[in-house]
Image (cartoon, rainbow, N blue to C red):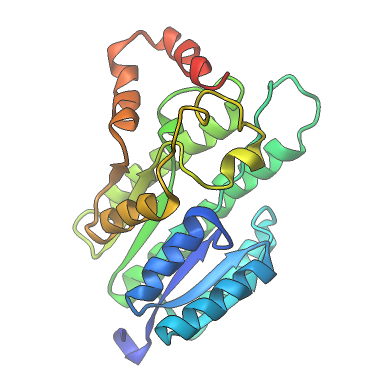
Length: 262
């Protein structure tokens, strides 16, 4: 694809080494889009990049980045956008930790806030004016149904996803009438490595039976982004969960969520 000034459009995907990020990369590559993949796991991204170059004859750049470090996030954007037009940004990277908030160790929560909130905000802050100046673009922020209610046992994660949802909706409204759109993608439990990484494989949420495949979930988010939708859920259960805060007293929502997270 080409854009104003003859620059080709590129797609930047964070958290691209596995899970939904990897599937977003495969979808974009199948559409012939040149890619920039960003995550901590360089070797895994290089393997994916080789696969996509060979299969789809596209350009793929891998940038190993610690998204919990704001300086590295800024550097990622500079490297990605120098002499290139980023017409799609997928803020997919995310971290979580399962356990009581009273635990003294703050390392994982600190990293979660930095990745889920700060890195996403920095990249959006850089991408929006870049896209407006270039004539258009799409931003897909991977939020979660978790953003609609407090989550005892995953308090920080739910709070960060509420932030992503709120920020996405607010900026989308600011951009109404322009050629730049923001989509908050809110999947439920999905068959990725998330549960293992968060230490919550035994919870009711992830032990409920067969989970939807990452590829199927990613396709739903990608289509919503291209259509310019502001919010997209992926299941009837997810839609029902997002309606609960309107149907029951707010004081009961943490108790309901806690049942799924036990």
